[in-house]
Image (cartoon, rainbow, N blue to C red; front, side, top):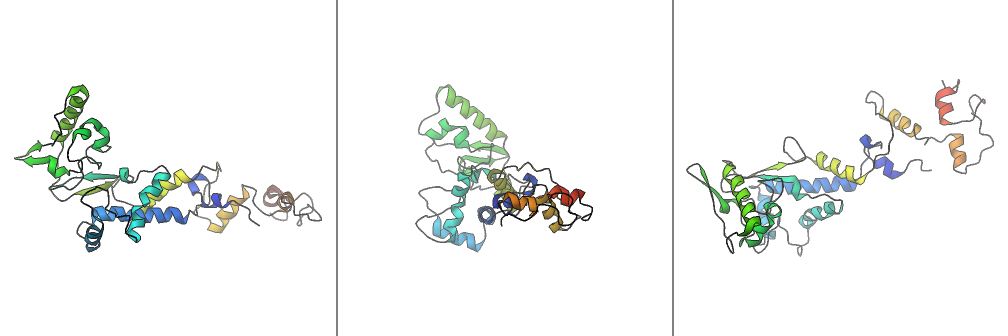
Length: 276
């Protein structure tokens, strides 16, 4: 007989559940780690193999993938779509830290502001001829001074475009490029390093609702005691009264220990002298 809904068992402890979690959340979070590794482990042999198999010079993706090619990398690439169905944008959780000879996408990846430049400056992006340009093609340092170059289909004109170009140039001129290779920052962690736990926690917040149980897990007690009390405060213990509510008919509803009151959770764990 099932006493607690499985959804409540999977619900995180800080939301009132038992905290079992789900395999789907863990799977999505662990596959997302390969996105982080692909961005950070630029010299790895495995990354060069993936790049050689999946890179397409005619289009741009945050991580390269050919959907026509089956295999585990295709499943890894589809994590973004799975998270998007939950309302999460995986790409927005990465922030690029451009270094010298940066290969970070100038328009399509987050590095200068809190959003990609193509979203912040849509009118400028519209007249850009090389929409897949990297930072190194647009921003260079010469004699300690930032040099900016663009390739427009036409010069920016009008108040909106001029406002956008002035704001963009001001940000680029004050930006400091790194001295080493590109680095990445994971925006869900204060240290900027990817962790499965941080993404899994965010997924859980969107997948589960607060049960509203005022219960604090006690680390000093055995886990089975915590589980028992967690069920107890929800009246999910197979007492005689609870069984009767589930159409299990017994000869008597009296407490089998003291025979003085009905066997409820409150009586059995609170007022029964024999149980005490």
